[in-house]
Structures are given as structure tokens and as C-alpha cells.
Length: 305
Length: 202
Image 1 (spheres, each protein chain N blue to C red):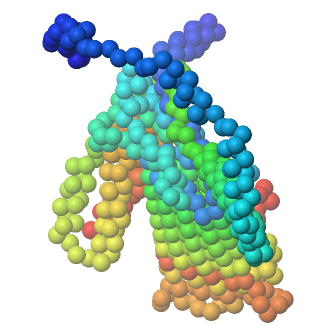
Image 2: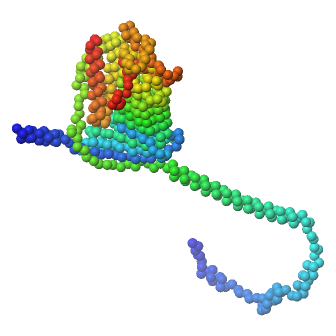
């Protein structure tokens, strides 16, 4: 019995091994450095690219672009690699970084991947447009604009003016402070430790936001979405939460003032929560249609992404 | 190159010409005549002594000195200016070269790297359009309807249909990437969900 089990296990392992395949990975590495001056902007247009934007103390913009082709046959990988083109040039005060595939309509035999590593001064304005792939951006302080389609967006420790538009691409952010505008469609938005002013429009997504004491205002307008607000301190903000064709959930320690509650007629639940102290306080306004609003305490195990 | 046609005749003619010699002592006489005698020198000295002497007005020397000084100043000024121009030109040239050196952006450095990876199964092309006939039937049904609630779902369905096509195009263009396959699976799940909602409402 024991031997038959061992033989069975070895056979399964052998089958597993036989299904494995060795592929050749050919990578083209493009490296370039641009001098940086005030007023310059980095403009990235990625196609199925993973884009990493980080900062450094140098007055330079550094680029390392890796374009890879994977295929069991090396020659095929090399041929397919040549179909991915790139642009890395400065025209006046704009640094353009771009990749695209020649003959995009033709089936490639290899798996093609593109990765940008961009390092720049923290005050350099950045515009990222990505079609599929992902964008990881951190430590910027000036202006950041992102237009993503089917591309996940990760932002960490970013200050200043942020304008993010996304379709079919989730946004995950932490330590964001500034004037922030987000338009998200079919995308989940998770933002923790946020400060500054926020204007968020969302359709078909789950929104999770955890404000800090530095929040100056938060205005969410959402449709067919769930909104989760996390916060323990009831004295920091005033809330106006409206759910049309949905409901508002709030912890018991907060005093709710029902402004409108007509679940049977207009299917609207609108509540207001005022801090117990102080006349002026930042306002959090949430309006959801076909979705619920949840005001919750931070769970003991911490916030999850 | 010049060529003498009748060289022999010319030489013959030259030989036939008469020769003349100067009389004896001619050269000595000329030499004696050129040397100054003491008498001649004396006459010359006397004549110079008799010449009248004129003293120029004081202003002439002053003016002359001033003109000479001015000329020297101008020449000095010209030298200084030339030096300044050369100096500035050197500074400008230095600045231009420094700026050019600072702002010189060399072209991208391109290199190739080769590696190997072991994968479970490479690029299995999946047919994502197996359910298309079912969706096509639904579209036919929807074409004959105009209900606001259904139309809303129809818009969602169309949006997901476009997304399906976008991901499919990307799978063609960039290959069977696992991330793209996951995205396609998510979109198909949502599209099927909308299909179910529409069917329930029809």
C-alpha cells in the first residue's frame, strides 16, 4: 500500500515535470538619461506596460526600459521582440516615453512584456497614459495625471495636484495629500491615509477610503458602487451620507441625524453626522445610487488591500 | 616653352657686330669728380650758415604733443578693446561649450540580454468566443426592444462587449500573458452576469 502510494506520487510528479517547458527570454534594455529643468514634464504612453515612477535627488530623468519576448524558440522570440517599438526623446520641455507594437493586429507567437523604470526629481510633473499593464508611482510632490485603461494604478506617498481617470483598472493609494480628482469606471478605488481635498466620481466599483486628520474635504458621487469610509474619531469630520436604492450603515457611537429616510417611496436614506465639538470641520459628502454607504471603524487587524 | 627658329643666324649676326671700348682713364676721371673737395664743403657750410632760422609758435609743439598723446591713447584703447572682445569671446565660447556639455543628451544605450525560464505550459491559445452565438441571439432579441430598464442593462452589456474585444486584441498583439487572461476572465464573468440579468427581465 505504502509503495503504491509512493509510485503514484512519483508518477504524478513525473507528469507534472513533463508538462513544464523551458522558454527563451530575450530582453532589450534601453537606458537613457535626460537633463532636467524646472517646467519640464514627463509624458509616458505605455501599451501593456508596467510603469514604475520613483524619485531621486539628481536633476535628471533616468529611464530604463525593458522589452522582453518569451518563446521556446530563441529566433522567434528575437523576431517578435523587434515588433515592439519605443520612443524616448525630449521635445522642448516634454520628455516623451512611449512603446507600441508594429502590426498590432497580427498574432504574436511570443509573450511580450514591457517594463519602464523612470526615476526623476520629486517636483517633476508626470503624465502617465497606460493601456493595459500597471503603473506604480511614488514620492512625487507636484502634478500627477494618470489616464489608465485596463491598467492597475498604485500610488504611494504622493502630494500635489492629482488627476486620475481610469476604466477597468483599480486604484490603490496610500499617503496621498493634495487636490485630488478621480474618475473611475468599473474600477475599485482603495485610498488609505489620505489628506487634502478629494472629488471622486465612480461607477461600478468598490470604494474604500481612510481619511487622516489632514483631510480638508471629500466629495464622492457614485453609481452602482459600494462606499466604505473608515475612521475612529467621530470629532474630526462632518458627514452627509446619501444612499438612493441603498442603505447607510454607521457605527453606534456616532449620533446620526436623519435628514431623509423614505425606503418605501423614493428609496432614499440620507443621514448627517456632526462632530460633537467645534463649529467648523471638514465635510465628507457621499452620494451613492444603487449602492450602500458604510461608515466603519478601522478593524483591529488593520486595513486590508 | 619658347623656341628660337633661326638660332644659328642670330648668333652669326651677333658675332658680326662691332665692339667699342671707352678711352683710357675715363673711369678715374669720373671717380675724382664724385669725391668732395674741401672747397666745395666750405661753400656748402657757408650757404647753410646764411639760411634764416625760424622758431615755431609754442602752440605748435603743444598741439603736436597732444596729437601724439591722443594717438597713443587711441592705440592703447584699441588694444584694450581688442583684448576685452577676445576675453568676452573666450567667456562666451566657454559658456557655450559648458552648456553644450551639460545639456548634451546622448542617444539611448541599447543592449540585449538572454535568459531561460521554466513555465508550466507556454501560451495555450484559448478560444474566448465559444459563447458568442448565445450572445448574438440575445443581441437579436434586444434589437427589437425599447424598455428603459433593459436599455440600461444593454448599455452595460455593450460596454463589456467592447472590453472583451479590447482584451482579445491585446492577447493577439502581446501574446497569451497570464495577466491579460485574468482580465479577460473577469470581463467574461461580468458579461455573463449582465446576460443573466437581461434574460431575467425579458
